Image (tube, rainbow, N blue to C red; front, side, top):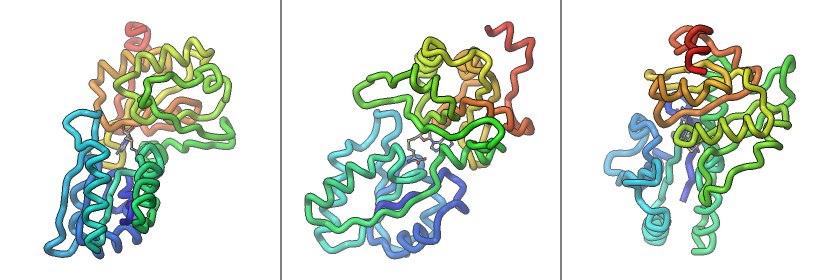
Amino acid sequence: VVLVGAGPGDVELLTLKAVRALGEADVVLLDDLVNREVLQFTRPGTRVIEVGKRGGCKSTPQAFIEKLMIRYASRGECVARVKGGDPFVFGRGGEECATLEAAGIPVEVMSGITAGVAAPASAGIPITHRDCTHGVTFITGHTRDGAPPDWRALAAGGTTLVIYMGIANIESIVHGLRSGGMAADIPAAVIENGTRPNQRVLTTTLANLDAHVREARIGSPAVVVLGEVARHARQAASIAFTEARTSRAA
Ligand code: SAH
């Protein structure tokens, strides 16, 4: 089994390794965030199985996906498990590796370009910048047990914050960071469908983030960037809220 990172959406952001793995696979298990254009690199006759996992509903249970991988691999077939972004960044790659190894199946991991790096870049945002931040922190806005992160530590850290899966819980994220001490006027950007033709970029501030996400009807997939670097978002083709609208929404 090869765990393949397919990158954030733009098919040109696939790695050469991913293209090779797709070409060698007998079976491809495809996550729903993966651009279907990647299938152009499979051989004719490759079995393609869609195993969407978005939002936890209408998805194939993780245990069943793992069972499928073990079933095909045990028959000697070459399985490519293709995931959005990088398989080891909020992608359950660690769990799948452990399960496969326990079943005695050799597994290889092929890194992909993660959305938390590529989507901001595609919007003109450098997630680190010597002028304003000494690092970046990646977090998920959606944990398995619903336990909140240490908002105070995140707010005090002073690094750029990149939040995956944050849209559904945006109100509680904003509330947590504000009560953890993050300044209301910290620049924020939201990149929806990063690197894809339908990419949208919303620029706002922490104080107005939840209201503006709702107003712009931001949907999945989207990443949130918080920090001074968000000021670098390219305004072309972005949804910028003016001061007047900002204060009305506040
Ligand atoms: N393994 C993936 C992340 C899977 S979690 C990776 O490394 O990118 C799914 C979350 O990734 C989404 O909720 C969203 O926050 C983010 N995401 C994935 N693709 C995206 C894209 N094209 N644009 C913006 N965010 C994206």
